[in-house]
Length: 417
Image 1 (tube, rainbow, N blue to C red):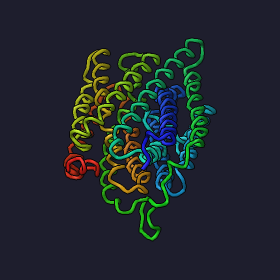
Image 2: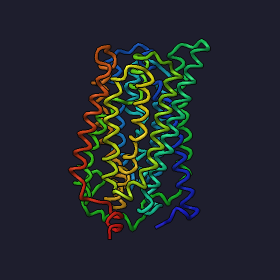
Image 3: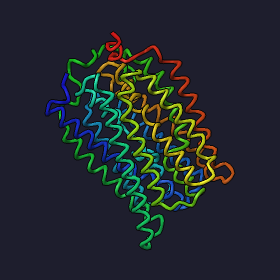
Image 4: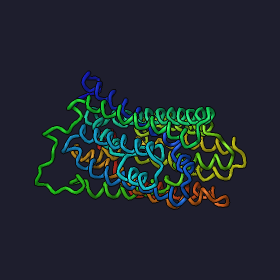
C-alpha cells in the first residue's frame, strides 16, 4: 500500500485536492445566483422547482452509470467525462434563457443548485484518494478534503455574489449579471478536464484488487451490496431533507425576509461554508475516539435542532447567527460518512459504493425542490422548509444510529484489539 509520504502519492493527492478546490469554487459561484437568475428571467415557482429537480435527477442518472463503472473503465476517464458535462451545462445556461434548452442542459449536464457536490467527481476522487492512503489516515485525509471544498465553495459564493453586485451597480441587468457569474462555472469545467488528464495511473484499481469477473455484481458491487443499499436508503432521507435548505433557497429566503443584496448573501454563504469546513477538521480526532457512526450521529443531531430554529428568529442578526452556528457543527458527519462507506467495502467496490450512496443522495435531494420552491415563494409558508428539513434530518440521525452501531470500520476493530 502506498503511503502519502511517497512523492508519487503526494502528487496525486495534491492534484485531487486542487480539482476539488476548483470544482467547489465553481459550485459556490452558481449556488448564490442560480435561483436568483431563474427568477430574473421570470420563471414561475413550478418551472424553477421542475428545473432544479431535473438537474438533480439527470445528474443522478449520469453519475450512477459513470461511478459504478469507474473502477473498471478507468477513474481518470470518468473524471474527465464529468468535467465535460460541467462545461456543457454552464455554456447552455449562459447562452440562452429558453426554458426548454435549460431543462435539457440541466438534465444531461452537471450543474449544482445547492453548492454541494454533484456529478461523478466526489465518489471517484474518494476512491482514488483511498487508493494511496492507509485506512488509519483515511478519515483525516477526507476531513481535509472536505475542508478544501468548503473553503473553495465559500470563496466562490463570496466572489459570485460580489461580481453580480458589481455588474448590477455598473448598469447590467440582474439576469446579465448572473450570467456573468455562470461563465466562471463553465471555465472551471475546462480547468478540471486538463487537470484530470494529469493524474497518474496510481489512482486506478490495481489488477490484483479486481474481483473475478465470474462473481455476480450489481451496480458495481458484489459482497457489499446489502449494506451499501441500506446506507443508501438512509442517506437518501438525509439528502431529501437537505434539499429543502440548499444554498439557493437560503439566499432566496434571506433576500425576501430581510432584503439582503447579492453581495451580502454571498458573504453569508461564504461564512457558512468556512465554518462548515473548519468543523470537518474535528471529524478525524472524534472518529478515532468515539467511532465513525457515533461521530456522524452525535455531531449532526444538534445542528438539525438549530436548523429548526432559523425561521423563528425575528431579526437578521439572530437568523444569520443561528444559521452560522448550525454550519459550524453540521459537516463533521461528512468525512466520517464518506470514510465509513469506503472502509466497509472491497477496494474494487469503492467507486461504486461511494457512487451508489452518492446517487441515493442525489435522488433524495431531487424531489425536494418541487415541494420547497412554492413554499419559499409563499409569504405565509416561506419558513416551513427549514422546519421540514430539521425534523427529517433528526429522524435520519435516529435511524442511522439504530441501524449501524455494531458495525465498525475494519481499522476501528484493529484499534479495539
